[in-house]
Amino acid sequence: MKRIATLLTALVLAGLLAACSGVQPQSVSLHPEVKSPTGNVGKGKTLAFKVMDARVDKVVGYRNADGGRSAPITVEGELSRTVGEAAERTLGGLGFKPAPFKENAPLSLVITIRELNYSAKGETVTRKIGVKAVLSARVINGPGHWEGSFPVAQEKEVVTAPDETANARFINDVLSESLTMLLSDPEMVQYMAKDFLQNKTITGE
Image 1 (cartoon, one colour):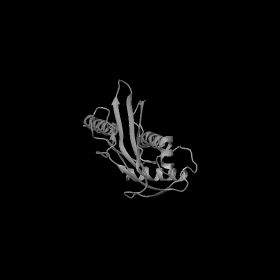
Image 2 (cartoon, one colour):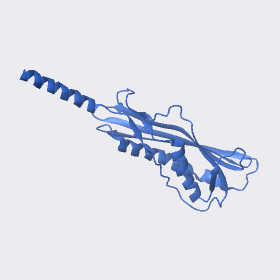
Image 3 (cartoon, helix red, strand yellow):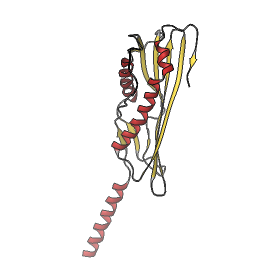
Image 4 (cartoon, rainbow, N blue to C red):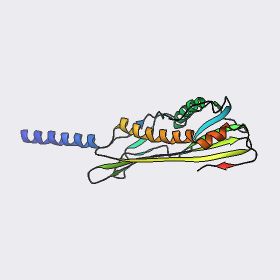
């Protein structure tokens, strides 16, 4: 009887360890930081501004390294608002006066979140995780417009599945780099700062 009780205890402990070893879903909190120069480039110009989230799937990715989908990663709150707040602070630092977006505004900027993806792939000993962010910008200034896309992708190898804090930091870093590239693009900033560009369209890469 004692042997049976010991066996049952061992089985229960094994089950608990197996459950704890499995990766769990995560909800990460993002706070992108923009590292860009400041200055009175905008000279107080009112800039109609908004951020759109064009992602089809709001799940960023899955922690499962075996291709499973039992441990999704999602973002807390509205990603468009999070990106918008960081962008507004930067635009203000550049001398622009961000205002709610209006169609037919003489000067406007629309930032679109095209991609924010997380992937995990099991290797022999380690696992490889990757994050990709793609933001795009469309500026209208008078009769012309400017467009650009800003993709950033990073990969790293880890021994164990990153916890929520580590994944949030990794995703946030990649998103911050994409947003920094966008708001630091000299051609775009100069285009927004121009008083008028007669019948000319510029397309950025």
